[in-house]
Length: 123
Image (tube, helix red, strand yellow):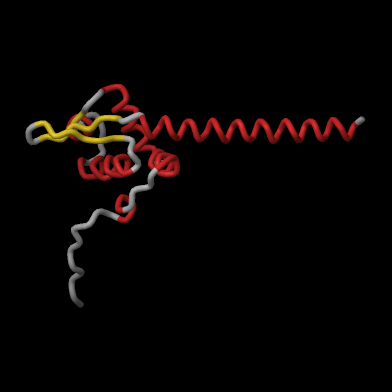
């Protein structure tokens, strides 16, 4: 039996960025990533060491999750010396919120039409 060759590519989950609201929702669908975003929203630019200091999650797992969030446009890093500091970028989340607002508005309109139709049938 031969050994499998090593792959230098990132896991499939992080290999293809999902732009727009779908990517944001997919990235935030994981509880760990949602917690990382919450920490980054409060703490500003944070290192992976700081993100893992108060948790039992490994540095490698946090790095993986940060790359998924970065692919969705929710976080980015800046290099300071030998360290990368990760920070939240609200632009994509704002776009996702606008998408949800539009969907909510469409549902309100559809329910209004249904209500009007039912009321018209009663008379």
